[in-house]
Image (cartoon, rainbow, N blue to C red):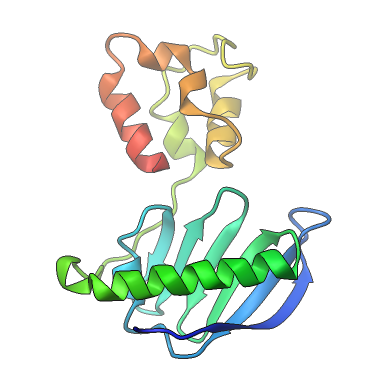
Length: 171
């Protein structure tokens, strides 16, 4: 076992989502050694190995891991926050147990931007997805507010490589 607990340190108001909170926790052990392995997990949007900062996109909000601190945004209440900490402890310990099968990430991972998604879209501005433009659709993809399946032209012949790339970026 790598980590025993993450203790709730503080909460603050989440400015990005009114009515939600940001929770900050302190791990019972520094996360220095595990962060390069956690950077292999799905949902990573940014990793800086020089400073050991790892950020994941969650269904709602973000999770950022520092060696001595864990932060979750857009959390409903302290109870949900405690559950998130417990789930993270389990994920950390599971990753640590499997570290021999993983390669520690040593290069920076930069987050995708909405324009990265836009560049791969068909750019037809067909509005089939319900958005007024492909750029608006890309912005919603970036925010995880719409599914790639909504872009019908992307599933037509000739766009398979773009669709596969987008699916990988979103996973």
